[in-house]
Length: 249
Image (cartoon, rainbow, N blue to C red; front, side, top):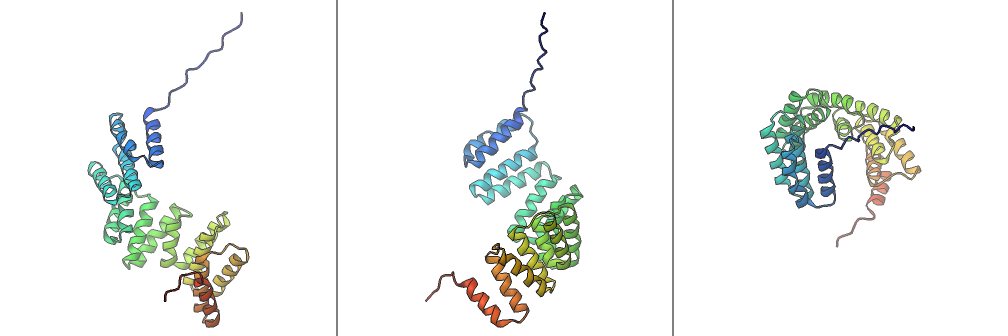
């Protein structure tokens, strides 16, 4: 008699996870009203309020409604004032709107809630840098760079606050296989900020010779020529860079 194989019953997928994926799909297709209508179902399923708040923010941002997004963050924090991720989101909004003190406070609160939150350290560093608190900013950005290796915003801020440290971090980043034009431009900018004009010029030439330079590379080339007091080259590069811009009578 042939034995009948035992068939294990497939575990059904978690419905709340499936529903969240469905909502995100609707957001991605621009069907914001349909996505909003499904949020109460998530609440009934007991999905954490923080996750629902993030979805509300995504919907608001998709609609281009900054005020609604900010209100969704505030409402989420009213329910869970120690949510590090929501505090980071508040800090991002504040920084984007040049509310530097608000960004610093929200990021600091996020670090209090989650001391190892790299994004919070980065945002606090960026806000402190913009407020002129360079020494404190460097401490935050240095820790953020360790927590978030290769994070563009962190390294970009470190380029201003501590350019030599930024150069070392970017070179490690490039050695790890991240050698795109934006990263190369960031390295050039850090080298110029560190006063390494010759090295920056060499990077510009390498990037240009490979056909990978862009408009930003051209502007950095102009800056390098000015820093080197090579006025004829600076003028030539400036003319070449601005040739495509519209002329006004």
